[in-house]
Length: 602
Ligand code: ADP
Ligand code: MG
Image (cartoon, rainbow, N blue to C red; front, top):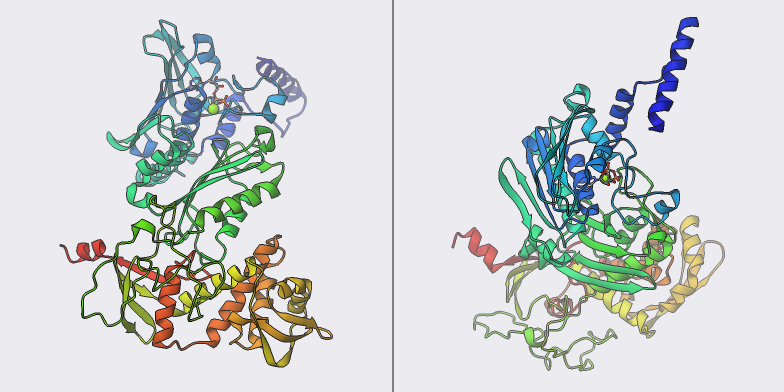
């Protein structure tokens, strides 16, 4: 109302001024203002779907059905069974800044609804042929509102069940320039699907379906859990690769699923993060996810995560941008640490064969055979200390819980080494099929885990050098080594500062002592420099150092004997994170029997 009078007053001034001199500045007519504003909220069919579905969530719907034709360019309909609107509200709902969701500025601080700006319906109806039908719970008649290009055409009484349906036809019919920016129906449909998935994951308890040109694409029933929803949308096979996340610290709760590094992507498309039920992103979240996977995923790969972060609403600012999912946290450090810990907890695979072990009789032609996990006497589990190299390792009985632990899948329950190809890759037959292993990557992984286990137990084996060595580093690298020299000492290095940019080393952690001191220190210094100020925690810093040291050690030890390969296969199968080397390269590639059968069309 105010807006209209204000607008009118401008118009009067404008005509008065006009009669004296010709102004170059003009107040834009309402219609144009609305259209410009619409451009911010409504970019394409998928953004219409998003806004409408969010309104349905806010209306408490338990079922939302979406239909589109021609990638949403011709027709979009979102029907819900939410609380609906009375006639007056239905008319108001399409006005700019009309919202039922906040009343004062203070409400923004603790927003719990998806919308609150009151712009979506106004924007959408100003750039389309728009029809809204709604019926408030308990009312006998409903209301139909028809708007074409922002102009109210008709308001009528109609009969319909409780809920609201919004139909949007010919999006941007009155904005040809914008319409031109829309892509092909197929591409627009892809975007709608992407939005649908995110929305569906954000409210797993709400039944949701999507139809395109009459064909059902998704249909996920109401009342499900986050897990059900992921399975419905991505399929059971996919779900098998996910590890459950369940983490609470103070008032921060993190739940969901994260993928093993065996499946990853070249982009962040499958990182679904929800903060208090709304799809959200923040630099700190992106950073924390990357950090959590550091060392198990290659630099150019992105993990797949489904995370629900719940914290008190006043801890998050969602009012950063009208459509962007960007949020800000009051205490980003806490969120960061919580995410990292949550993911890392979920990923640490407890490798125990337990009752899952299926010892299989091996054919007699096996050249080498290793039975892993099914015979504890022969191959005892490695305890926290890295004593796998010792010929008489401490025997610790394998965990025999009847229930398979979450993520406690061993790499294989038995395997035999068939040989090596290309003088490098080790070929294995396992219970599930054919496996190729890169022995260098595997060696790095095994060394790294053993080294970290020693560090964590505070029991690092050291090896004194025959001749102490002085190593000089580049100044910027020397800076990092000096800065973390205490950490080096905790990790089993005997190292002292020896003049400017030089260090005297007279003992190394035993597991990496086969490499040259120079190459180890160089490798570590470079890694520390690259990691810069990231990773404020000592544990991350230790991992950086250990990772670099192991790389240097493996490089120094390039040719593995048959015996060593055997040992390696055994040690890798029991590693916590056996799928990649600490730098993220794969250690093993699987060819499951089922896949081979499919290839051979059996
Ligand atoms: P916002 O969601 O930011 O409040 P919208 O323009 O999306 O703004 O919607 C304006 C108002 O219309 C909402 O505040 C709500 O009261 C009402 N509304 C919109 N969609 C629905 C719906 N599906 N069911 C019930 N009420 C709705
Ligand atoms: Mg809204």
